[in-house]
Amino acid sequence: MELQRLFGVEWGPEEAEIDDVRFQVLSRLIIGPVSETEYERTWRWFMTLMESSQRFRQQRGNLLLSADRKEWEGVVALKNAQLEKILPLQAHEEFRARTTFLEELFESKALQLKYLELTPIELRNACLVKIKEMGWLEDAFELDRNQSKADVEAKKMKLALALKDVLAPDHFTEFLRVQDAGYRNLLEMTRDNQLPRSTAQKMFDLRQATVAELAQLPPETTASDRAAAVAISQTTTSDAARKLLGAEIYSKFIVRNGSWFTNFSKL
Image 1 (cartoon, helix red, strand yellow):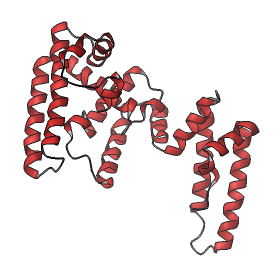
Image 2 (cartoon, one colour):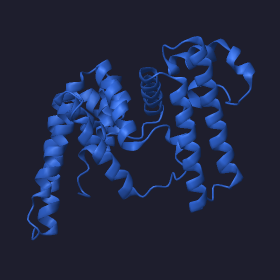
Image 3 (cartoon, one colour):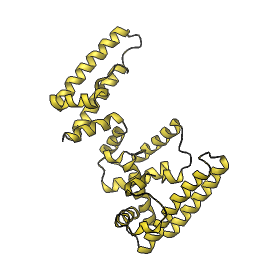
Image 4 (spheres, one colour):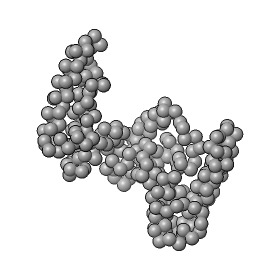
């Protein structure tokens, strides 16, 4: 469970943990602005959910039959009904948004939030959209974690379509970019060298344009002609990137983690 890593303690149902100052601060941050009674009840709800999820899987050795899934669906429905009785509607939504934010921040599965620069409203809405399209507290509620690649991609497509309605156009475009591991690589490189985000964007657009150009080579292009076209593209792209970054930073980038940027031989 990724929220366990955030707390930096070994999770367990022991009441003594609630007296830990760090535990108090972080758990209150997760739950949000609620009354003392609501806080205590919500946190105990959360701890028993984690315990139930772990025990359910362990008792079945992670070999889940259709009957097991049906039983767990009943447990999930009961747990959600319990939470709805603990928290008012607005606080309930806030708690779900905050836990989703933390899940995505420390182990992104859909949004790549740490690479985005969203307004607070956009951030909250993005988390709520993710809950609607992909579910909530996947590590606790989802028993089947081995979804097919096709199913995962279909969910991500629905998520992207929904996010288009809650993000500013430029922020949505950036969301699409950060789904690419290569672009995240570029962002990390520009951050490390105190370069603006626009530099990473220009670098990414440069590579994408080159990829698109090579994709348009006629099917009948010979191997030697294709190799020549790739060589020209690599040189052109390298020269343009060197101008954007400067020779020193460009050299560091290529040596450290940037070989993918100009390696078009497998396209």
